[in-house]
Image 1 (cartoon, rainbow, N blue to C red):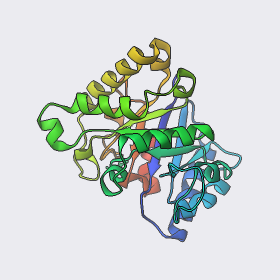
Image 2 (image 1 turned 120 degrees about the horizontal axis):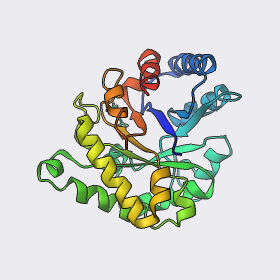
Image 3 (image 1 turned 180 degrees about the vertical axis):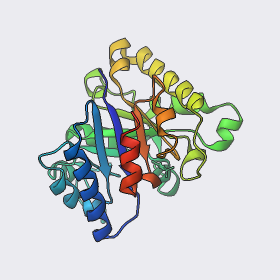
Length: 252
Ligand code: PGA
């Protein structure tokens, strides 16, 4: 059975004290509730990863990075490797976020390398895919997402693919306050699951968690998560306030 997941992508937000408060509140909630089949992940900026992994000991909170280098190690000033993350108990990493694709020119081939690096060090990639607004308007959104998966994920062997989480994030919905409708999300998630089934078979497809991201918040999460192929969310803005993030976790 696949796991439901709520992952918070903090992006480049919060100072140390704010980060500490937010994690404390989330941990308090997780320790009080016994969450069944829901994985809660926080993906803070890299400088707060150690803070997060310290808080995540002895409870069910998981920590993810927002990025990792496509290189193994060496003279890459400012970069952070999968080996480093793995040595700090970071168990997930967002890969292929549209902001990385857009502002840092990360292309399909580089993302495939990042996926490989992550898996090599037992880090679960949260692989993001999703179309731009003009692509949706032109009706090419299925093709776009298919290509993103084919070029950066579908080179994996089935055993490795079992350790991948997919996040569908239509770029027009990210940070805009305009979320995909539950029907639009379900349609794309079912399409993605079918692609996985065609490539790897029915069982891996059934077991793959596919998250929705893009203006998912405490108000719309329930409706989005109610769809059979929506297994949770990758949450940006609404993950920065513990009340909102907790409400989203409670939306299953
Ligand atoms: P948002 O961001 O929830 O602020 O739209 C989601 C994301 O970029 O992962």
